[in-house]
Amino acid sequence: MILYDTSILEVGLMPETAKRIAIIPGDDAAPEAMSPTLALLRQLELPVEYEVLPDGEELEATTSRDERERLIRETVDSCDTVLFGVTSGKTGGIGYLRWGKDTFANVRPIRWRPGYRSPLREPDGIDYVIVRENIEDLYLGLEGHLATLLESGLPTESRFGAPVAADGDEGRYAIKVISRQRTERVAHFSCQLAQRRRKLGHPGKITCSAKYNVLWQSDGFFRQIVRRVVEGYPDLTYEEFIVDDLAQRIVARPQDFDVVVLPNLYGDILADEAAGTIGGLGLAPSACYSDDFAYFEPVHGTAPDIAGEHAINPTATILSAAMMLEHLGFDEDAQRVESAINETYAEADSLTRDQGGSSTTEEFAQAVISRL
Ligand code: ATP
Image (cartoon, rainbow, N blue to C red; front, side):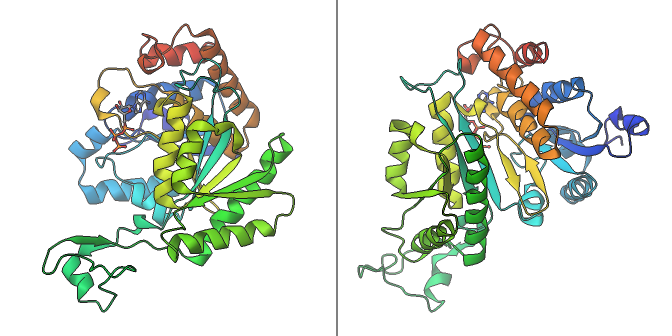
């Protein structure tokens, strides 16, 4: 079974300082976006080895789940970083990339570029970053039967005196955890990101948001910790909004934000909303950082409804690749990729369906490559 692309034969030609990038194409429509993104990366002729895994469908057909998880673990561990094309479960691997590698900060830049098909009347100037805590909150997956909760000795009445459920009724529960260390580190990460952006002319502002008016303990703790951490960065300003208010501000006043730090679930939901304001999910890249590792993937899912149509917009994957290049120290190449994207949108001659064009994924990517 050939699991690796023959491109690894390039290894012998590489200088010793070559970086190793794992390319994991992912599932459904995601590989259709990854394939031209890899072509674009190769076009840059960087001192990089690409270790390319098969797409989810092929992996599923040729390996057991355990073999796939082992393959991904070994591939990730043998590389400097990973460009991940999103999985709906076939490829898997997300557990290792997120919890195994402790990638606690999910960075989701929201930036409108001329030519993006925003539904807003005045999208000009939207340029902020959502930092989503990536490990805990409801994503620990601690769910169970209500009966177990009722037998656990935890309160069986709400704060307002109502029973957790009608007497004898069945149900399920989920546990939300906000812990000090994980909140502190994502808050510090956000502050340091705001400081770096400040040097580029951004205002140096942290916006914190959660449902702290209802979830006094958990979201209240998140707000309290973020507030305290930001106090240690006197060059930054700070504001906070209840999360439903933040949701409307993302639409009504998106130019006001700089760095927005959110607990896991709100970050997931609001980053999709924010992507909608600039023109859709096809345009939103992301990166997930731990202290010593990072991987890169688009914000969107696997777009199963358009799989096989070559209609998926690869911009989010290409811009995720640009974030990866910057992380590896290829700043100029990252800039080249971004400029090529900017030009392609400004010219608007090869846009994909979601942006009002009629070009295929490959035609759009080719237009970007031709502008590198
Ligand atoms: P998941 O559960 O993995 O998030 P989903 O289908 O719920 O999957 P998405 O895959 O993000 O969510 O897709 C939501 C909608 O946005 C779909 O109609 C999909 O086709 C569209 N979409 C997502 N990404 C893109 C893209 N890159 N280009 C064009 N359309 C996209």
